[in-house]
Image (cartoon, rainbow, N blue to C red; front, side):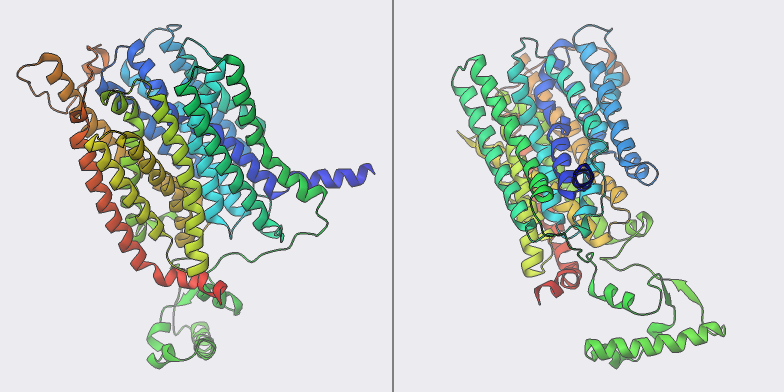
Length: 589
């Protein structure tokens, strides 16, 4: 009896759905960067920062959230639990020290030092992201869109989750939210670090997997709707501490519910799991079916191959090429031809250097920089945007954009998977659609019409979130899984690159210039967008801007940049049509 229970427990511990659920929990508290809009006002007031200085903290946060080369490299040398442990330590030290400074428990540090602390604390999130995505994409190789969308969705929803937990604490000290995001994610990461890992998930395919994904999607929708309802109730009605406690307990029940899936599969489903083939393009499958190594080709094969061979049926073409390769192999043995390592084709495994010379990677990068960079600019400035339009409670919009960010990630993964699996059409078409949503949302922010703040937040949240479900899946399909961690963390650099220009320079400079115009009510002396090191040390008067003019030019510019991103995404769609036909076309036949 005990032996059988031990086998069941071991099977449960190695179940890919347990890993997936644990990764969801990690991501649900790991997106600490999305809470910056809630903690920036208390940092600004307690340390007497102006908007430019807060924007520089925001850029440091974006850099920390996106510079993930180190965790990408460490996955080749360390077990994933070691990667998660490093991330937990960074998160604790970075935000823990920020909390000590903001609350006056340690001496005030210059702005450049605060930027380093914000960077270190937020950079811990990249370790969480890398471990969760690498383990789950390997465990679910044929469900990359839904898996990435759900995981990145929970990271986006973490802002609303942490805000609700903070409401439960009901602390008059707003700085306690900084303490919570320093300690909470670190505890969860350490608790789950031995569960989140690859477990050979492609050997655990079950007929009930579709139902399991449907269940998780249902939980996601209910969770988002519930948080939206709770947020509106708490904003419009004065609720007691008891009601807030009940709201938070229900939230935890919804978060814990997915654990039912691995428990049911392991202890109640009698049918053993099956193995699925890994996702490869058709031409790679055919090359691996022969005797020749997939890693080398003959440099003369294209010269020797008659042109009419390409016009033959697939089976006959493969036969003729195999005969040609056989003759060339004999010639190679006699020294008549030389052999070289063949370059991978899109859909196969690339190294980082091989991917960097591909135009497709740079199209993805710049499209992501313009699209997600504009969304991140809104996230970082949401408090000031809502305040300038006369809204008193910015946390409503912070929670809103977190929830719709979540829905965009989950929905982006789901609908992009339909595009590739049902129609064998390039996944990046879904990125273009998301960027159209964002262009409209930024335009509404610029107009400042009644209610446009809510609609704009919805559209930008959906579009921004969709990027982070679709881009990782697209990169894994075009460039393979071998160096997925490094490729993913390279692409995330597009986020701070866009934010540095759009938020750190454009948005903050225009906001401060308009605020100074309003404060003086006279001729404005343009101070430019440059800054010097002494500005880091000087406490300047906090200026506030009121009216649509504060972000009018910024929002119109962001809308235009999203239109450029749409064009780049459509170029990528055109270039990768044949790749997706090779990857998914056979599954439709």
